[in-house]
Image 1 (cartoon, rainbow, N blue to C red):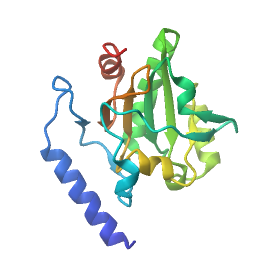
Image 2 (image 1 turned 60 degrees about the horizontal axis):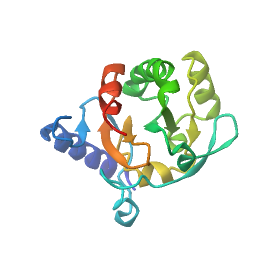
Image 3 (image 1 turned 90 degrees about the vertical axis):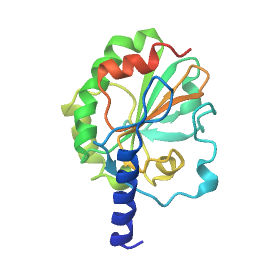
Image 4 (image 1 turned 180 degrees about the vertical axis):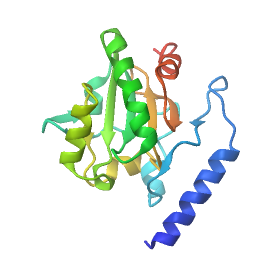
Length: 190
């Protein structure tokens, strides 16, 4: 695809999301203006089921440490499923909040799975350095070909999904979160 077309799609997406006013109170998708456009080439058939109230599509990726990880292995825990890249300023701002939240709540049945969109990032060494420099201890699966990011509709990053302990999508957040928001999004789900 040409860059002008992708840029136009990204601008339209941002404008639509800025006009869309949603709140946590009425359980709609939460959108923040501090997200970065990534992709818009997603087949409709791949994303029909990725919506609130549906089971999150399972996937298996290799972590930064070279180990396979499946989303379904976390059933029984609440999950913050995050999509990010090292070059994304809102992602960089969000990571310390995610790490602090993880440290506080990991023993309370909450897991963070932060999928790096490796296909649009700067390479594994940069990712490893970022993780080390930020003291990140939660799982970092690598989406090397971008397929999982496409299935989960990561038009902009960061994008996060809040999954309940049965693997059902409870919410979708486009843009960065802080610790308080993560707590509010996970406290009332089972």
